Image (cartoon, rainbow, N blue to C red):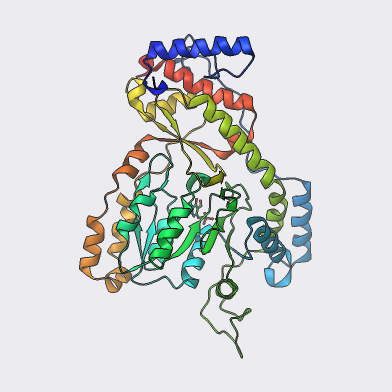
Length: 449
Ligand SMILES: Cc1ncc(COP(=O)(O)O)c(C=O)c1O
């Protein structure tokens, strides 16, 4: 029998049989935990599973303090008068297995830069996942192009590769897969579709530092990869971003464009400015923070993966709890968030909101994640803007409106539960607390709903 089909009594007896068997063998029990049924839920006045704080984020050390101070004292804060940004770019490109890296002010502007240098703009369409941080929508709209959504694969939380080809039209220029939550999208399928239809692939790896697809770092598998180094990120410096790639001419354009259009490498000028540019330069002190943060990235990634795998092993058999699955090509995840789907039917119809409140009361911070943002005001605001009305026919914009229908993503938005990455930097005991809190809610679901 499938464990997910156990009724409550069968589940509890299976759980306690597993606990007993494990206690006898000193192995980790299949359900990981003793029964929490007797404990009153904290939201109903019981004792919370956890009261200790969770690991803080970000974490910094003395070496960062010294290097930031020395840049401050030098007065050379801009990259044109120092070498810290260039040094970080070299290190990050090497770590990502890419030939080149250009740092930017943030991930949004890394994506805008990538779209610009690949000549994606007015009238174009870009295939995007609807399940993403809003910046992925914004950068396509901001380039006066249409983000055309391919529905989500609810099991993996990623863009569904089976839904991409049906969205390609004569105006499609690019696929912009997002390795959302730090879990890799199916890059074999995406690259094959892109090749077949002569499209470029820009990876939004803004949550996926060190994640891997078949041993290659996410961000280095498509044409260009974009990263964010914002405060909450695994490689943080407050605000920051980067574009990585292997094509020297394209990367020269990235550099030149982000530096006001000044000549750089193959972007040559006899005088002045050979191309139109903008200013998206990172500062020296941002890069100094990144150079210190990069030292902990591998170790932290290992820990997040170990703890995430352990947590999955503890909660995957609780009925109604469905942790994210991986595609075959995933060799490593980054786990910017730890996600699972919550099936309220298995919790006596306890709503997700009430489940989240109960979990928070047990001392486990959690959230519901992204909503169906394509129905938020921003899409209509953009379609009604002067730029879009001048750049697209009314028929195209009306067709776009009509196609806003992503049932799998809608469902995922109703079921997702997330934990932030810092929770995964703790101990196995911390993961037990999370699993115990979920089990406690499961066992008390009749009282809570
Ligand atoms: C998936 C995704 N794309 C793009 C961005 C934009 O990055 P930033 O906030 O650095 O501009 C983020 C940031 O959270 C993100 O999570």
